[in-house]
Image (cartoon, rainbow, N blue to C red; front, side, top):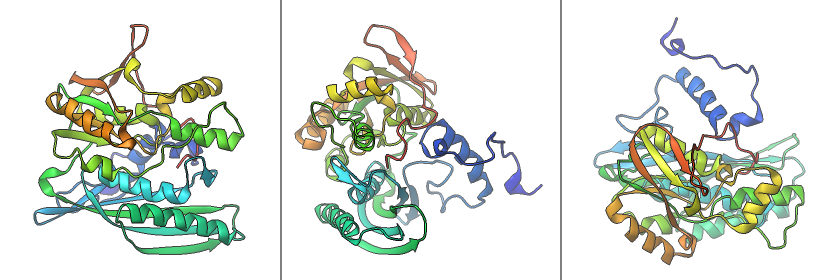
Length: 346
């Protein structure tokens, strides 16, 4: 048996299912199985495939290139608060920013279905340009393919950031006593997508939180931040569990402190979905020292993207789980979802 095939666990399914791309346990199991077929999984002593962080790091002298890639298949392409163009560049910026890296360049590749309207493609490109300009992030290269298939547009991005080697922020960095902060209301993006997709109307409009967060995160990097994550697929439930597992720490979350819009809560109840498992595209989870937590919260709230920020939990000793202290006073495990309850949200 070759080295690459040793110790590779079995997965039950013979075929890929939608749930394998949902960001939850199913995707984690698939990736853990597949990456073992890759022999070279990191550059020098940087972060690579084994860490499954938001980006890889390529150490060069005293700095590191932070390197991330993502693909976007959101349906519908245009939704309240954004579109696939805004989403693709914002999501890539956020993956770099939560590592503590300044985004410096991005590539964008399009896979376009034959017959897709050019005016809609122009609209997507214009959205990309707005975010690119606002964040001084040049689109430096790309690719375009047209295929005879029943798709509209799929976008792939690759982002590059720069950071000093000693300042890299990882998922595994939580320490006892850290406070957990969420930068704003949760579940907005997933519910906006679902309501648009299913034609569900509410008394007040629900819009996606889709936004690039470098300007928000940049302002708090001077504080003692130990971990950050953007809670996209699988929502904060998935991201909190990833932080707990990788840091080998228990996280206590206070349900009454989690900011959720009334409309999102009502829609979630109507659809039978837990808002803690719904994707966000403009929020960041932050693990910060007890001493700096209030200062970070104050700065976040000065930015419109962080005005609803709250301290929602604490890191509490050894473990690899997330405990939710409920509104009624009980405790339960907040488990990683098996998949994303709202497919094709990003």
